[in-house]
Structure formats: structure tokens, C-alpha cells
Image (cartoon, rainbow, N blue to C red; front, side, top):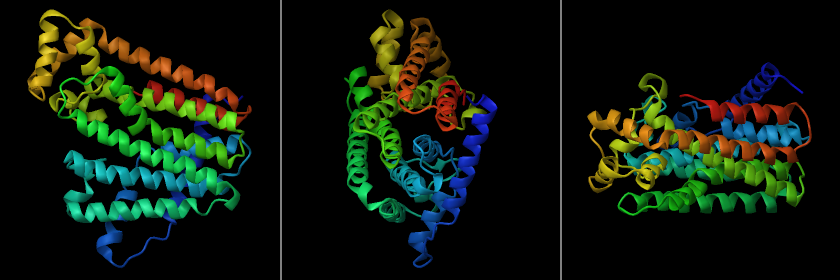
Length: 329
């Protein structure tokens, strides 16, 4: 079994192969107003977790990285397409330390270039073996539909005052979990896995999607600004009905409960009140609950991972999932 160093080296090797394939993609030049923004967003970097997990899953099942590469490129390009449109919907000014596409150009250009990236993701999928395409497209279409549903639910939550924790879990299952589920499903399909194995790996993706989002919600409040790259407590400042606030509303009483209810009614919190919110959440056990939920979901994912045959790629996935669970910024 590979040690942590070996796993890290394999993950880095695959990431480098992916970056090389991404840089070699042929993207047009004319009209520049379409292609320049597309190139801009694809060059913005990122951890490339989704394509790396897909390539490792397929490789664990005996498929060369090069064979699965079109699918890996497809999911990463689709992910970046969603970021372009999310930034427009969220009125975000920056992404990964750079101007968002709609700020650097304009909203119409961002929408159009995002649409192009989605089309490109489908074009890349079509390069997979023809015999696999029906199952590949079925998985992909399910993901696209679920992600759009999740985004719509998230948008609806902005104006609702009565969002429940169960509704929030359902939203992140679709908005965050759907793409990660698809990553494992596609890797399994390309690897020739059985229906039962594909289902198990899809469940793995669902658990990791939930863990990843709750960890993000937690880091939003507890991470240091300079490491997190975002304003500490941004979700609370915006009044976002994320895990921490909804959990606090379900656990708090007395003065802390009134404090959290006011965040909902006022559609946000003043930045100077973030330390008090964190203190109340700590007292109510919300921060501990969030960390425990991340750990629990990661452990469930690890159990699902047993469906893959032993080998260095499987252990690299395990190492990556542990790193995702332990990240502090």
C-alpha cells in the first residue's frame, strides 16, 4: 500500500498530466469576445480535484489516464462554466484572486462564454468510446439537471425565512454533490464497473459532496482571511441560509436564538458582530457538530471506496479524501 508521500506524488503526477491536456485544448480565436473570456476562466487555476478524482477512479479500474482524459477535461470545463454563471447570479467581483468574467467584460459576454464552455464539455465527452456514451450521457444529464435544481433551490432560499436543515442538505446534495457524484460515476463507467459498483461510487460522491460543502461553510467562519481568500463570516454577513446558521437556529435558545433569528429577518449580519456569532455558535456546539458531520460523511465515503480493487490509485483517492476533510483553508 502506498504511503502518504507516494499518494501525494501520484496525485501531483496526474494533476500535471491534466494541466498539460487542458493547455493543449484547441480553443478558437475569432470572435475574440467569445473565446478570450473562455480562455481566461480556464487559466484561472484551481485545485482540479474533480478531474483528478475521475482519472484516479478510472485508473483504479485499470484504465489509462489518457483514455479517461476527455471526461476529466469535460467535468472541469463544465465546473468552470457553472462558476461563470454563479458569479453573475451572486454579483461576485472576484474569483481565485482575479476579476470575474462579467466584471472584466460584461454579463452578456460572460453568459455567452459560459454557454460555449458547456458546449465544449459535451464535445469532449463525445470522444469517449461509442459503446460507453449512452451510460456516460445518462449520468451527465442527471448531473446537469440536479445541479440546476440545486442552484434554483439556493436562489429560492434567499427570500425564504423558514428554510430547514433538511432542505439545505437536499440543496447541497444537488448543487455541490451532483458534480462530485458524476465524477465517480463517469470514472466507474469508463473503467467498466458493474451497476452495483457504479452505484456505490456514486454514493461515495454524495457523501464527499456533503462533507465538502459543510467544511466550506465551517471554514467561512473559522478560517483566517489571508488563508481563506475570502472575508471571514461572509455567509453570515450576507444572511445566507447555510449549515452553521440553520444548525444554530435549531439548537440555540434564549438570547443566542434571538440573535440568530435576527440574522434571518435582517437578511444578514454586521461585520463587527461576527465574533459574537462565532462565540454563540461555539457555545451551542454548532462548530463541533459541523466538524463531526464532515468527519462522519468522509468516513462513509471511505467505506464506499472499498468497492475499488486494491492499488496505488485507490490509495491516492483515499489520501485526497482525507486531505479534503482535514483542510484548514
